[in-house]
Length: 449
Ligand code: HEM
Image (cartoon, helix red, strand yellow):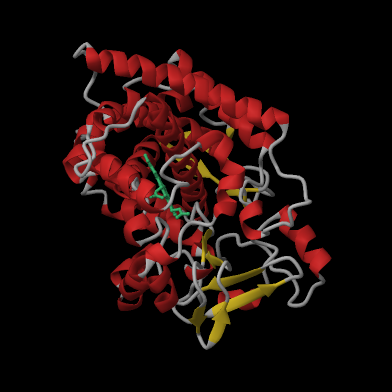
């Protein structure tokens, strides 16, 4: 028994069929050979892209010469109405300046300060679930709610029930429903005559979300001026000057950044946690081990989290099998030569955590769930060289440390109070939306311990 994996397509299909499969789902549109390939080229009449699946090449793009491989503008097309000029979309000097202001807020010391808010969100999730014990629940909804709660509590010191927070969460769901294939434009550089993706409704939703976030940031700016702001991530980011220029984010710039913290911070963690819960139901012996370990949360503190070792290994393994961000795209700014192949300027370079984490030539038993692998030689080597759930290099996820506290903490809090059980006939099928989700949700039976 191995964890669910999407069916692969036949090796050779027509371009038309490929595009059709692609529209349905990015993952099942790919052939089996990509799990063994070091590199693959997609050549169509409209575009060329190259998937790289070899540690050395990924190293070059993400770590050694990141400035030569900026983020592909095509990603922005889908996300710009919501995210504006946020750090997720910018390149070059603008991006560097934004990171100089944002990074200090996520440093180790600050993480410790966010712990009480994370714990409160985890406890609130447990309390909400109590009323649903012995019923079948959809886990993605549960984890989305919890992860959004974490973001609002850590960023603005308000829970998800707060009037504006609740509205942002609700409207964001509507935005996603309207825009389920956000990433498509990045992978298929469509010719200009193909209509773009933003429907009037999508744009309206994005505008409303941004207006709500605007209210939060304006209120916060006023509280900072009055010397009455809580000491949370928003205050930290809004009061940190760029060490090189002294510039601070103004309210508008802050809206862009908050939008990405909300999006990148809750979608991804929610996806990872929901898959982890499914894996726990699939491997009950691991679930019991984690529940036993979670007893140390009787007296929770930031230091306790570092003792949740099994929980962290399991969460890490879930991030390997179901990396929330399955693929990333960069663009070449000059002609390159990869593996004796010419890669022209302006090509799309696809980095696929999904395929790299299951690369058959690198990982032992790549499709199996085995949290003990992180203690083996192969696991350690692969963790260093072929494991990029948070990307790598200077553009690595700002929230990686945050997510590695939040994920194991919420997981352990849930398993301490509940058992999650499989429901027959409800095997989830992974599909790539904005993050790796299940086609029809992740359904499990919840039993209070
Ligand atoms: C399990 C949870 C998470 C995963 C797997 C994840 C993964 C990623 C990945 C792969 C990227 C790079 C995307 C690319 O280059 O195209 C990224 C970027 C980013 N993430 Fe996360 N993330 C997670 C949680 C978070 C959290 C909790 C926050 C903030 C609170 C966050 C904030 C960001 C930001 C701001 C960026 C943009 C960084 C840049 O481009 O310089 N993420 N994340």
